Image: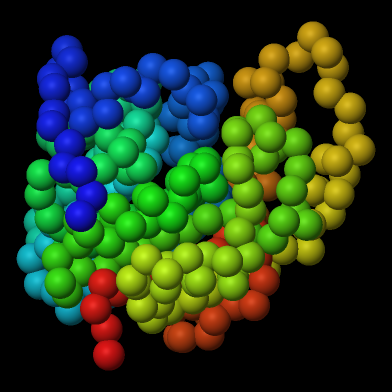
Length: 280
């Protein structure tokens, strides 16, 4: 059994892992400013929200009323996206206070808590837990997966996405403090190791994968100015013009349609897994 954490209120935020709330060891604090700014226009965020919302609602339909914990909610964009559904009770958790400050401002009606998933478990259980592009930042990822498993109800489900393919490793991964990019075998193996049964495994960002691969090759040889802040380097790599965002957003509907009809995509920048706590 994992340690059940005791909360402490800091300002307006309930903290379960107060000791790491301001250390920003696994994600740059300046990244939250950029994330909050580009979330509304990014084709990748838009596609992610559509796909992951569909996956959540498929499981919600199976479970009925559901409590959902979004681990690593960042600035609360996806929690806000889900909050319109009256059949979901959404809690967003984030390890760093700066992200939570953005999240509370964005959606004051949602419960947001400070929590490090590797330190222990919360004092409640959930039917659905999500973690989108979180576990690549976590050194002790197996411990985190074990804690997620323990916080789920018996019929509960974990929906997780992570960056995929180590051959795509680039300066962007270093700027945002990634520990790894996962292979399919590694993530599925760790989920099984911690008691999960994967029921859906697919890549995402498949249709745009050739362009993504090319951009990562070019990124490896692109010099950064010594005077350039990491925030600027990050912005250069994740922001696009309105026209490019519009075109890429339309292309991403192809990925989403293929996944919705049950076709597991073989390669892509992101790996997505739906894993149940107990499944036949």
